[in-house]
Amino acid sequence: MKQNSPMLTVQQALDFLMAAVRPVTDTEFIPTLEANGRILAASQTSQLNVPPMDNTQMDGYAVRSEDCADGAARLRVAQRIPAGHVGQPLQPGTAARIFTGAMIPEGADAVVMQEMCEPAISADGSADGEHVIIKHVPRSGEWIRRTGEDIQAGSVILPAGTRLRGQELGLAASVGLASLPVAKRLRVAVFFTGDELAMPGEALKPGAIYNSNRFMLRGLLENLGCEIADYGIVPDTLEATRDTLRRAAHENDLIITSGGVSVGEEDHVRPAVEAEGRLNMWQIAVKPGKPLAFGEIGRGGAQGTVFFLGLPGNPVSSFVTFLLFVRPFILRMQGVADVAPKATMLRADFAWPKADRRNEFLRARINSRGGLDLFPNQGSAVLTSTVWGDGLIDNPPGRTIAPDDLVRFLPFNELLY
Image (tube, rainbow, N blue to C red):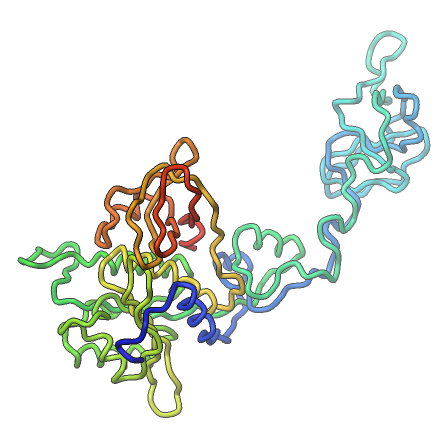
């Protein structure tokens, strides 16, 4: 890619990345109990109705509605039906004491909740124990869950590409699916460049900083269910960078780096990628995060290539570009169809008078009035803003923001998982 190529817009870059994705096709069956966070590899169809039989939504009495037409019917309690038990056919003039989830007996067409019933009283003033007074005129079907009301046999309950959460696992279990086909976990290599980087626990030498990006990116990748191969901090030399790229390409599905993708004399990632493969995209009109690199690294011979994504070294730039570009790329590689985060329009309770030619992503949080407050320092190295904020304001190029303007807001809970 030419160094002087014009910067892509955010949407152009996303379109380019999505068009380039090759989803990983390897799958495996795993127990449904262990499938949280995994990506469903094939659509799942129910082989049964849910519920499998008509059952009651309430504790109460199963009745024939025609026996309760006068509003104060006195019926003999002929049977008791707990959940998991099958009652006898209900005879005219009788009721069945029934409990939530129990199967509706043949002949009954309604359930009257117990709060609308009371024991019948004998001539001596005591409860007779055998009869109940129904103080409600039920309609046919009242408080009955019908067979197949939730799921009908033969229907698709979960489409391929679904990212499984607790509710999807519960749905799969409700139709008896003990195991599920899922995409194999994506194996992602990470490494970090910069002789100034140190690890927490080490003494900081003059000019050194702690490698926050290593911890941040690993956490973001774990949120997406990836297996991580961490090659650590790579010396700032072209030879060391090329060697790490070669090793990572042989062992992983995707390579992500942080730092070294700009045009300085000590930025070796970009020339290393061009030497070991090719650079397909570089520089995006986004703030923070302009130097985002995308390319492919050869595995040698006929083994094909591995995708490469190079993030900026500044921590906020790395964080924002990961959420905007790397996250949807990884999800699409995993087979997820819908990777776009859900945005909302919220009121700005601040002024942003300086327009930029790039698409800005401002760290903000929702205040008690339902509007957005802006973190006071929007610098690309101010990692505090990512912890303080609830999400990103997507501010188009050339736009200023005045108080009460509506802005497009991307919540972190839509971007982190």
